[in-house]
Amino acid sequence: MEQTNFIYALLAGGAIAAAGGTIGSFALLRRMALVGDALSHVALPGIALGLIFHFDPFLGAFVFLALGTLIIWMVEHKTKLPVDTLVGVVFTLALAAGALLSTEEEILDTLFGDITTVSGLDMFMAVAISLVIIALLLYFYKKFSLTLISPDLSLSVGYKPHMLELLFLTIFALGVAVGIKFTGVLLIGSLVIIPPATARNIAWSMKSYIRLSAFFGVLGAILGIFAAKIYGLAPGPVFVIIAGVFFFVSVFWRRR
Image (cartoon, rainbow, N blue to C red; front, side, top):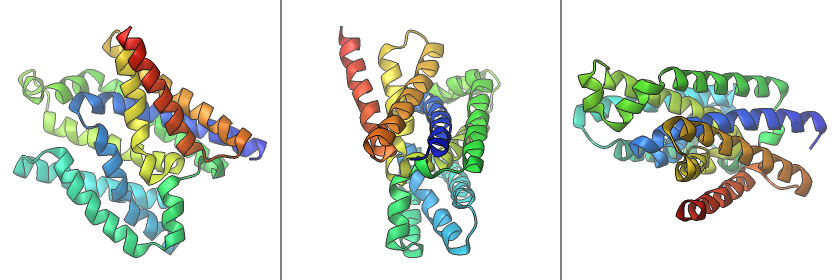
């Protein structure tokens, strides 16, 4: 890995992991941790179309994720089915469409990602989008927290839980779209599941929980990218393993 690409990977990976951890801290409150993993598959047709017609696959991924999110939100409030059920339906349809549109080699690259190949423009986009995600989550911090924990209570104090849920799902989709470059479609759930789960074991307040979620995400990303450079490994899977080690250490810390 060249020095310039290494720096780009560190900056992009750290920013993406911080955004993923922050998103996950809210998702865990609603028991939506696995939604990010399933939702990532909705991006496959958009990525495949980007590769076929030679436009930015990130744009295709986000368009399909945003469309899938809107469909899930609309059907949820029409049928009252759980979000994870609807995500499961939409993601299997998208996965089938993506498999038909993609070649075997393209699917392999998409499934596992590679943050070490980011360009300067990719890095700036990843950092900018990640900062926007974090800023939105912190700005709507109180409203999201109350709405995700208790929509009825949120409604009673004058919030609009349906619109806040749509906004959160859109931010979630944006985080998944930008995170695919780092961990790929198969491992994207690790960005929004493991760091917040670790933080939850040792946090002493809601604010510390959110901060620690971002911190463990960034720490895992940096260590994973360093390991990729030193040992010639793929940074995405290494990040997942490192994040998993942090989680199990936090479990024993909590028991003590």
